[in-house]
Figure 1 (cartoon, rainbow, N blue to C red):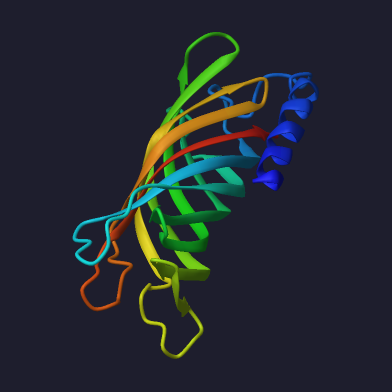
Figure 2 (figure 1 turned 60 degrees about the vertical axis):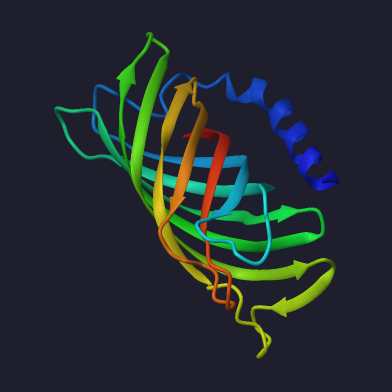
Length: 206
């Protein structure tokens, strides 16, 4: 939590310097390539049929970088991908499913000019993720980790759909959205679930 709060303070202190750039992480009038950095939070859950334990949302952190390209000379449509580190899972009391993902989305954005300086960008597309670490605890008993032979509670590979809306001003970027999991990530007998998450990301485009 201390690291999380420190990162938020650092971004807030850096925001005035970001705002000195000219507007235009996304150009709605010409073809362009852009890059971006993202920092945010997720509120993740496991849905479907949790028959052994009752779990609620788990809050985690997101860090990543993106690259995007305008896909049409006549329509403000952008294709964006990137590389994210995300903390996912679910929890309630001492019952915790916790895992850390590497995530690659491939989304389509449509640019709408709200004002001369602000662009609004709804987006939709698939994402693909792979868990690099994780653990499963029930009433304080650690059931293991991914690499232990006895551990079979979570699948590493996961995919789903990512949708939301972003806004860009003076290269500052803010987005909110929802991720809908498709893969059943639970392998342990009697437990199944799909990873869903609300997210909010802040960053800069350049």
